[in-house]
Image (cartoon, rainbow, N blue to C red; front, side, top):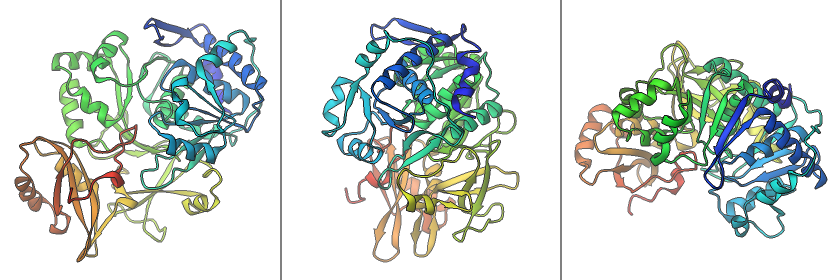
Length: 491
């Protein structure tokens, strides 16, 4: 199945139904039907064709959330053009790497971003492109794509090294959407509040594709703003909200009576892209009357695992394998381990990317007999629930003992006054490395009291050797902690 075949149930089958609303530059609300999206993307597709773009070419965009991103995505899917989203938070060095690696024909962006791009990269102003496309014919021009045709190059966040472009196909996006529609029972009657950035797979592969595949209604906002979130929920009355842990932390600031009213109208809150502290899940359930559904995915595989819509949403876990996805926990020799044993998560299914762009060695290293090694460490319970314990690269080996930071971080965030915690390894002349805790916490937080409690609940080698108070943890745009940017314990 090509993505266009999946979309056509909405673009053509629901042509006259309301599809999308978003704020225009003047603040007025723009409302579009699915037929409008079909016509807008057809016109843009003709402009891209006139500018020489053909199937297999790459076209990048560096844009915050706006309807033109939807137009661009649909036009490229129709033409077989490979989309390269660029994080709007990236600076020249990061952007230069993506442009050099992907070699896009052009980058669609805004005029104020021109200085962030290296010389030689062709830039197209999004407003100019949109204006020119409006005068072109609105009938469809499309090429035939297959399930294995590349649809996008999504670059990894580069938290530990150089970002690599995951080749995501039409089939990857389609399988992911159909899996989530089934698992989360998303229907045309749903209303989705889209606050996640569309340059990321969470917002694009999950949000946009669940919307287009189901034919539900979407309210698109430029970015999540805690100060405006209550207004969005109360005015739009969504039934679906996909977020990251930092969003849910901010939503805990909503007064209880308004939180309860929001919870009464919203049927599903989903969290991903970073670990959700158990304390946040519990506080949110108390305030909103909802247990957040935590799930697990990654750029290269889209969604792998989810807590159930109906059934136990087990705190601290990311749930069980989604439809069409196989998951195994393996040891260092690629052998499956018993339940409740620690190992690396390996996945297989139609959701998994076909490899890394122009990185044959990295592709070969990531795949074994059709299985993809995620680099994430975890355990599987006898009934299939998976608990993540951190990245393989985050593993701390201290005096020969393995330490998984997630376990310590969960305990740290359970203490009063500790808002966020990250545990990372620091070099040690005797033990090789030791765990160090970085805490976003109140000024009155008593580190000695915390250590006393940790020593009662953890093996001695797991107890942090130092505690560093920080104003904020360095994070990616989707909230993933960048541990390589944490300061040394001496600072």
